[in-house]
Image (tube, rainbow, N blue to C red; front, top):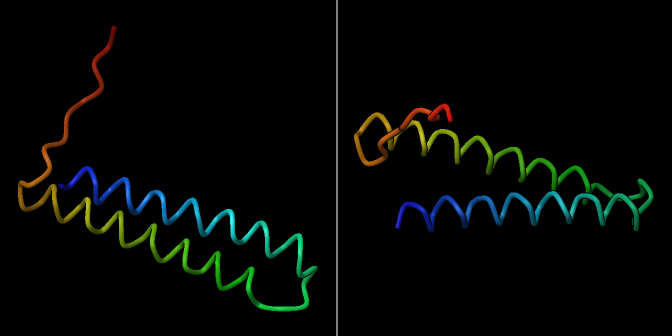
Length: 69
């Protein structure tokens, strides 16, 4: 469930990043849609980071180190 939540957030973040690019190319600076899409992307990124930190703090997510090969 937690993996699905994280992947869902990442999908929404990528969608808003793509929407920002699309609006930037189509609107040519005449509307605020680009700014709104990128603002949503930043907000979703911050929420995802906070959720992961809360999951680690409460013990629902177990961090692990990178194994040297």
